[in-house]
Image (cartoon, protein in one colour):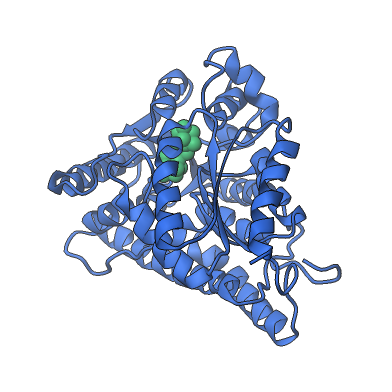
Length: 388
Ligand code: BJ8
């Protein structure tokens, strides 16, 4: 954003989403709230919040802990897993330190096996995630797993989770998602009045903070964006190529890709990953006979590559492309993430044939060694767009 423009969330943590979350979780701990660590977009937040527990995101994006992770894990493993595990092994993750238990899901093999390695450090509850979401048993099975999670939280934290509280949290999440999507909508404007860091600040915080605690932040952000539009304030140039970034979660050292896109003249209009806007898509059915089933249905709709088939990723992309009108789609695949890597060819074909948009796959990790190579490729693809 241009110099002199006040950050969207001007709370002293602008551009440092992790620190904002840490400060929030610490303040909740001081108030006596319990904290659980989570690793995935499938973690049923409404049930965790219905137990009055604060979720802490444990996925890590730092190169500095990879070496420690590799003392036990294979080098040719996804950096997200190695970095997360490296933090735990070196006892340097403040989020893990604050977590009294860990909620995990059977998504990819690497994460699954890492959970085994950490399960003797803190109570670790692994949920068996159905990976064929379209099969009729999936909803029943995932509902059962979510009820089991409620039982685990009740026993571990000596609490009771009523159906009414789960229903209330469903409504709270719907409200949060509605407001945050109104903010995302500003990125669909021809001149984009917010930056990816500002979106990231909100999407990251939204994972840990309750709707109530975020409400004023979201309302103030909406008002600020309306003013920016009225004042003609926007990010980048009027004709900057619009970029949609899809794929694996991206944070910390992996945001090098976002920086390169911007340095090459692009403006990011959509972050289609669990660290971005993906977690806020969809809607929970309110007033359903069984609120756990409503939670189950919504999470099974999350279009992660661990699902097969994962056709929802393509149908969601259609909606996103139609609305946010990107000029180019960049798919970020973390090294050794086989499911996103393989799925990338489907996404490429879909984007190129149906939407006639250029597509670029970037395979990377958290090191800085490939920055110049990525830069060359990003500049080349953005060049084709600006010549059109
Ligand atoms: S819902 S994207 S947060 S699994 S760790 S799958 S990058 S090899 S993070 Fe994920 Fe949940 Fe899906 Fe979202 Fe690949 Fe690495 Fe596995 Fe990863």
